[in-house]
Length: 254
Ligand code: 6GU
Picture (cartoon, rainbow, N blue to C red):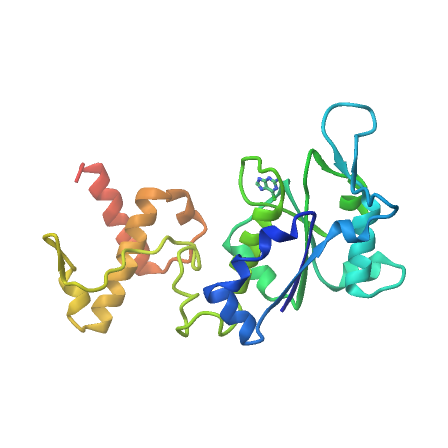
C-alpha cells in the first residue's frame, strides 16, 4: 500500500515511521509512506500557502491551488483531479470529518493507495472539499492545531492491518475493537507479582477453557466500560447468554 501525506509540516512525521511495526511494514515492502510539503507546490517567490478568509474573521485559510497541484503532481495526472478521485480515497483530515474508528481503518486498509491531506489554521478552502477530497476524517471531538497527528493515527491504524505487518499471524484479529469488543486482560511472567496472581486458567494449558475465559473477559470489560459497543458487536448465542449473566449480576448488585 502507498500512503501519500500532504502537509505544511513534514518534519512532524520523521520519527514515527522509523520505529517498530511501521518500520517493519515498510522494510517488508507492505507499505510505503511518502510525505510531501504543500509549500513545494505553492507559486511565486514567497510560496504562499495560506491567506485570510473572504468575508473577514480571524485566522488563515489554506489556499486551494497548492493542494490541488500537489495531488496532481503526486499522482502524475496532467489535468483532471476527477480521474484521481475515482481511483483511491483522497482524505481530508478535519474535525468536521466522519469519526475515525476500527471499521474505517479496516475499510481503508483494503485500498492500494491513500492520499491524506492535513488541514491547518482555521481551515482549508471549501473547494478542496468540494472538488478534490473524496472523504473527510476526524479522530475525535476535540480541536487540534492541524491534521498531522490525525494523519499519523490513521496511517498507524491502517499500516498494522496490512497482511504480515504484525509479528504473529492473527494478531490483528484479536485486537480490541476488531470484532466490536474491548480486549480482556493480558498477563506475562512472573506468575506472582507483588502478591498478584496470574489467573489459573491461563496456566492450565486448556485451550478451550482459555478461549472461553478470554471471550468472557472481553464481554465483561465491554459491558463495564463501553456497553454501547455491544449493540454492534459480533455476538453468538453463548455470548448473549453470558451477557444475561452479567445483567443479572448487576441487577443483584454483585
Ligand atoms: Cl483530523 N484535525 C484537527 N485539526 N483537529 C481534529 C481532527 C483533525 N480530529 C479531531 N480533531
